[in-house]
Length: 108
Image (cartoon, rainbow, N blue to C red; front, side, top):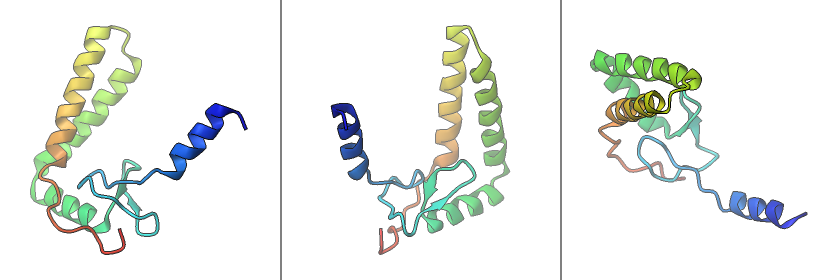
């Protein structure tokens, strides 16, 4: 195994997944995956879905973010690409807040 492969293996062995909603560690045994393929605590995801159902604006922001992702994927103009990425980031931050404030599950 060459040095770059050894370094990658070392980094992977120290990887600790985190819930993208609360930024707290999540064990692989209790990890769930949301509709974006990101790891989440079940409790965090349930809270996000409940919030989405009570605030229809969140769904529209998520849909707009996905539309911008498709545009950014094909954008050739650097300034437009940067503008798309900034708007995506802002929309995702708005849909992510407020962070789940409960304690992570005991096995995390």
